[in-house]
Length: 422
Image (tube, rainbow, N blue to C red; front, side, top):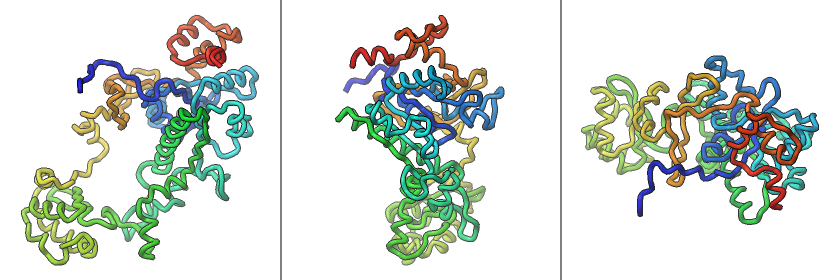
């Protein structure tokens, strides 16, 4: 198979897809950020004056929110006044030329604005209409507000996070929002595939609580089988051993020997092959039952030398292990750097902010240059260009020369062109 030219520009697989993004804060914007990373054009619809709530979230770089930059990179911004006839006309044109709509308002908000899914299913049946909310658009809780920590608590993950003798703990990132965002992406891609087959858009309804339940791994099944409520296990896996942290001479590190073969290899790498022959450690189930003794026996060995010694020995033997990195160490992690996972984003100012890149690597998509910052839009930055693109050719708007120039750079079918093809 011939190798492709590394300098060849390969547009993302979603090139040609336009996403109309009504969402704000995190779950919706993270969902549409992933779509943008995969090549979709994302037009972010924001409130006049203030825009997305996260524009006011710190930390700030030259009075611009780094939080906003991270999750709105590569998007366009337009502010619309839904009460204005001209803006309603523009929104209709945007809907005509868009493939996906994403919103994360509470149920009923889009209906009151006149752009609910039932109406758009009749007037714009090609659109994949995606809603992300705390509890979805059905069920007794659908009208309740659902923030990340609310669904972390209600969905059970807080009861599993922390130490057995400690209090329940929130997962250190916004697990509820991010999980819903990723399930939203999956739903959108499935709906676009379905539309390719039957030329019909569909409704994607994502509830954050549903997503939390889906991410509980085997916790529900364990309770159903064992009749015991799973609870906090600290740093170990409830069904595997050794699968936890161990103390070395200079700090803690992780060993994950998740099967009998890896346990044999671990014992050899630690210089104690006889450990694997102890009757209480012969199977994974026995090791789980005798975890306290297992940890004690392993740490008798590992506390004698620095963690890097053991990590090198375990890696040489093929046993999964790792240091417990603090966030600052990710910026110099050679694996993340090799895969372009540390990228830069920026607003209008010169100061770029480093953040995580796109983890979806595809042979059909060019890698970005991690040293070239990806722009996040200023509020309403693209209004004039979008007006020129969608309304000028129909004689509904006379653009400025700057707007006309900006519109020429936007690769998207105009409303008039779409109507002409219909």
